Length: 171
Image 1 (cartoon, helix red, strand yellow):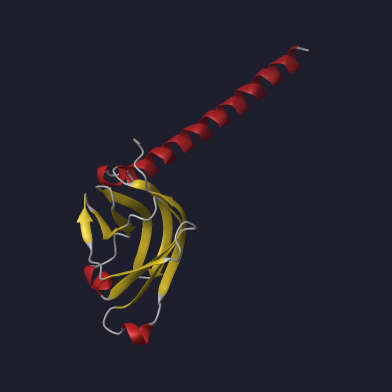
Image 2: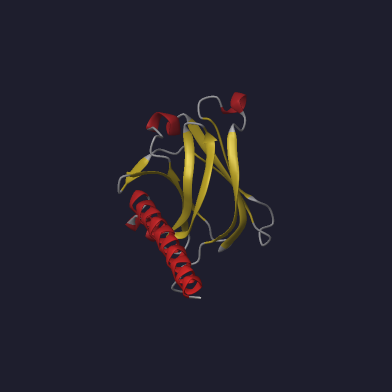
């Protein structure tokens, strides 16, 4: 009987130690992840920030997307890029955005010649447009095409982002 009780105590001790060790490993991994990908002050200022992990090309990859609202109607579409993206890559392409929303009679079509911006050690493309028609997008479709040969290149790469709300959180 004593052996059985002793065996049960030892078994519970071993199981408890393993659970604690696994928890500590998970905590360390989470802390390392936060250190590697801290949220910047700039990103905290954006509306509806989200991780997208999409790419236009292998050299032109988008990690996050958010909205920067300035005033009542100037909307900045903010694309956080992979750290390896170069100015030459961004400036070789134009960026097209089509906005879809059920309140609009037809989609809004926009085209930009973006440039690379570095903010708080991270690389971004920020393109701006005055939008007064809506405060929400059902989705946006983004795509790139060659800046110097737009007729010949057509759409080269793109992706879609759904459900974008850009009303200030305070309102």
